[in-house]
Length: 191
Ligand SMILES: Cc1cc2nc3c(=O)[nH]c(=O)nc-3n(C[C@H](O)[C@H](O)[C@H](O)COP(=O)(O)O)c2cc1C
Image 1: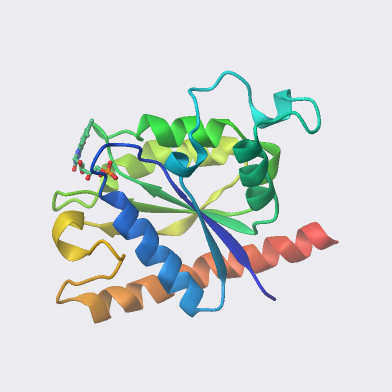
Image 2: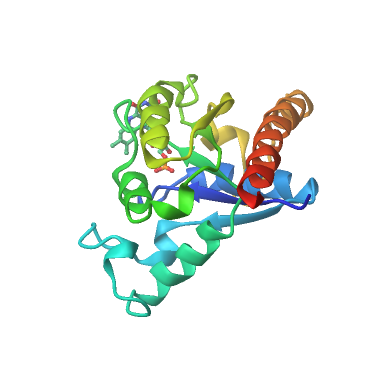
């Protein structure tokens, strides 16, 4: 079954680094013949929430919200790429995710965190997983964490660390799990 995954990245910070990890994940999924779309709040020029997508009359939502609605609606799973800002999610990520709801229902999500520290953003996982469950996209058990994002990835999203082969195997396990749930829930939704 062909799958589509939205990779949702949530930093609008000047000089942001997590875009490297988001591109890495997009490339890795593409190599597995998965359609991987990057959802980036900077591309959307999104405001702090005044209306959710569903609050607009049909056809009246801003073009960028409409575009992202269509991408999310046609996705089978979501990979959330999050930094930890004081052990919590970046505000741009929370804001982006809160603009939508129906689009996520009965589809799995997976958490991918990063940081410039040795911890790889792991501490944001708990609040993020609760949030994703409430949004209607239950998180899978596997997660992926990327420490030292500033050193281990380049601007093209290539992993340049010496352990890249090992980390690639870790990605494959992570991907296999989200693919399993995405396929299973897709079949269930189709029925
Ligand atoms: C407001 C803020 C809070 C941060 N808090 C943490 C933190 O709790 N733990 C950590 O490892 N790094 C923290 N950092 C450093 C981030 O890991 C680093 O800036 C990272 O590049 C942020 O992601 P971004 O570049 O995609 O915005 C923080 C950075 C900012 C700007």
